[in-house]
Length: 238
Image (cartoon, rainbow, N blue to C red; front, side, top):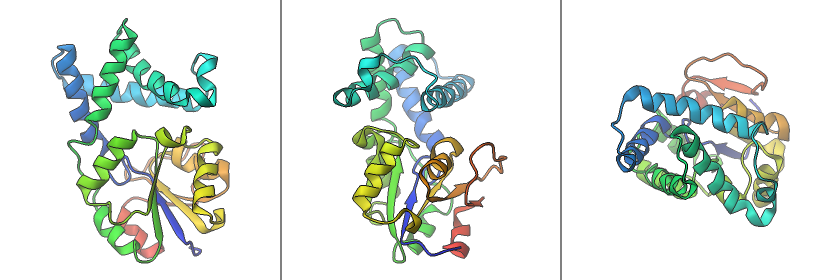
């Protein structure tokens, strides 16, 4: 593997078990909705949520045009996150859907587990590389997850779509990241679990990627530079 100066990590399902975090937050909104928790309902939501964001990333969603204006970025984020709950639970009152989204996002960082090997590999890498986070998740939840996992000492910066106004793999997200890092793209590598956001980011924006693929899924359209099944494999390559 070539030499790099900066390693960018995705957060959810790369360093943090997002299923556990999401389950706790989901239970919190069910209490407000007066719906009993059922495991199949939760996994149905996860499937819906993944398809929802895939549709958004691939511009297959009908969004009011005015929300795309730069001054309306924050309103767009709120709209998108609330709309998924409006659709999934058939909530007619959109303001109530906004409230449900607020409760969900505020509880994403409460009950977390780190991915196996994450602490050890960060300890190994942090003296060798500049380490940063790039996430599409809510900023406050990301901070909570990093602090509770004990990762805060390892990362120099956290680049969050909520703050930048754009999401991975959008080139505007990465332009902002690279402008702040002040490094060549050839000196940077991204490690992430998602082909459509992380690996697509590298393919579309000309930098190297490592696909964290513990379930040994097949590659579809986005080809990673490298692939691993366990985070500790990075010791052999970085």
